[in-house]
Image 1 (cartoon, rainbow, N blue to C red):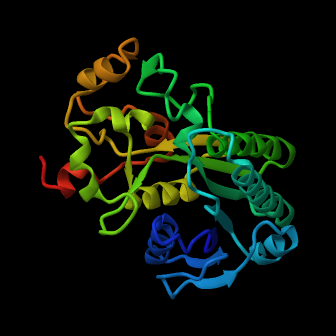
Image 2: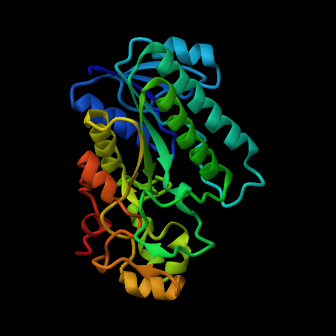
Length: 291
């Protein structure tokens, strides 16, 4: 596997995980082709093609020659309801279909793609019965973004069953960056430590952009086949309060799985650790010097 096509590899001005993934793959010696509607702000070593992935013919033509695909392109702004999200749902499912079907038609046997933690219950208006979550938990998305990702997970299952292509969906948690000015910058966390209810929407989960890049690499090089989904999150929550305190305050009827540490992530990453070898390296505690 030498040439990787990454869709959405430019990253938006506020959310640059695509650029982080492209950089990591280049550093590991891969040839990378970035397909994006926006020009890249970094990684000039990667081949860039401006492509509208809502057009099947253009998508097919520009995936040609790839050994594997990393599909990130999406309307990536999660919403808290499904009433205003028709365009978001339409675009996310259409682009995924075009990329997946093109990969199948071209004989590309591995597609790694960005699903989302939102399929598991975001924003948890209905409290979870048990935490940490597990990737076997039934999807219960509530907004158009999460619903679009759940639909694409089903699409991947059907295409694998029909054609044997491997689709690995990575359920990204809330991605944080170590550069000031990003929409989710570590420096923005401290004001929330005394207001945990404002971060309960995703069970106080987060993940560093560099750990996302690691997870993508692990998925590309793993021996996993089929259509499988894995949550990628940091090893801890983004709060100073313990899990017992957080759950008692915000989800008083929710049980905590035995053996869960005081600050362990409540968005379960066990499957990614066990099957992909995912090993998150970054924590706000180190970055903000709060250890």
